[in-house]
Length: 251
Ligand code: PEP
Image 1 (cartoon, protein in one colour):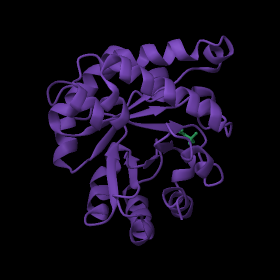
Image 2 (cartoon, rainbow, N blue to C red):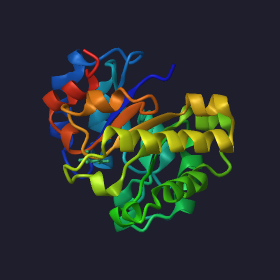
Image 3 (tube, rainbow, N blue to C red):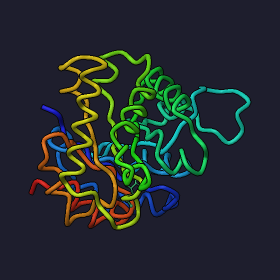
């Protein structure tokens, strides 16, 4: 059985004080981590506050990006080794905003996944097609190729433990959610790809999130789909009440 994982992606929002206040507001109302993993991925400048505030609670903590080297002359980058030292459980990589605005390539995302594993931080690997690609009905080819590139050289055990987030770019921050059937169809395609690349067991273990305008009103319907194991949530994760409704969707 895969444990559902609902993750907030704060993007470039929140400061350390707001982070501490947010965690104080949610910490006693989170589900048991064995029932639903509730995770906040925050900007690098907030991670120390996040880790301190979340210590001893059911909240899992993560970063939004990392570099693929642990240290060196890489001005402005974030070390995966230091993320581990700070207590980060997860790190998002390959978000469409990083691929688009910061020109991240599939090859770099693959290197980042390996660097995170080398340091004991679980990657959340994002994939997803643009509106143009969907309108051309090429979304499956696009996402399968992103997944193949991101997972290249990873072991079955590593893939079993990581998280893949399917996020159609046209649904991110637009209020336009993919229908639950569209989301399920692509999450199933991703699981089938993992089965083709590895084996049935790995495909059964890997957790696949849907992301794109997930909110308290649609989370239940999305989570009822057999191949959707969680949500990666931007806007609706910024307010404690809304985050709590998302992570407690089973109640
Ligand atoms: C995201 O940040 O990955 C995302 C899906 O954003 P939103 O929920 O705001 O669409």
